[in-house]
Length: 446
Image 1 (spheres, helix red, strand yellow):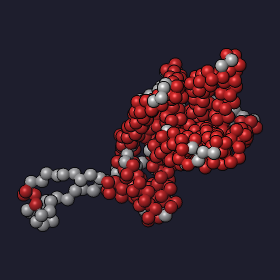
Image 2: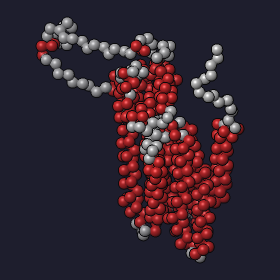
Image 3: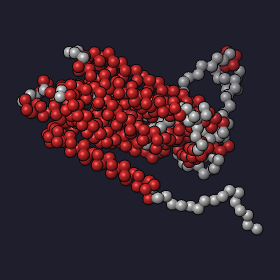
Image 4: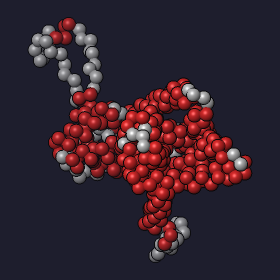
């Protein structure tokens, strides 16, 4: 006899066309591409073709270094490259376009209203530009926070996302400034080390390539702190990003206004505020990164006891040096694909540790069990490649442990003079790992 299901079923309905993933990605890519074409035309119109090419060649120099630095900070739990590509494209195209249009409109309006073009330029640089530019860059951080929440779990993620966005914005802005400086040199005939181009390059590329990332990182820290808060503290979660954004605007305004503080105003702000702030934030991010590694070492042992991980894995996964050695070991013995699998294993294990920490603190979402199972399955299917590599790295990086042994223990042991009287018992392997071969996927199921 047929029985009705214990819960009502809903007919399967396909999503509307505008809800499909490829439609959303296509619309986003199209939007950024159009913004890029418009900003390209605007910058080229202001700088000329030669100025644009010179500015492009000089502005691109700090970009690989800054992106590599932010990617290094994200090595504990690396996010997908597509998030960073979106952030850089948003900063270089969308945010830069918003800033150029809004700043120009506001400055012209103030100059017309006050009949004081010089005062309008100063007000635009110190008040309008920081508000517009930091808000435009913060939009990318907000979008990643809302729609890529799984990859936005703390302060380091906020720093990386905001820093890469600001790097893209600074790249476009530097093209504009350096291109205009080159045009000025062409008119005046200056060249060499005394040229406006050389001075602009020294100030913007050599001395302060970190300026825009430093401002926007404050917004990213605000979003990172919001990601660490429980869902029930909604007002606090909303105020933290806003506070970070206001701090970013304030620091940006101080930096832009330093030129109006007198002959040595720029150097005073740079040496007394910007450089110390950069050092302090760098220390904060690195300290947070080390805390994340500590979280990995503290949260994963429970999965060792359950048989999902090997006994040495929490230690190896909690050390960046051990992780690197594991990837090299896998590459040396099984090739590039094995090294990539070990890297994925490390990333999944880190995500699992952070997920469990959030659950233990009451901040896990309703999909905790589903997400935990997904991560455990991903680890299980890669254990044949990753576990021997991590075991090797754990042995290679383990600190020596001094053992105090009585003199008589070396006299009459079964291993002869000079050896311990008893041998250490081997660590019992979980039953789930009873059979597997290194670098070959195991077939046994948990």
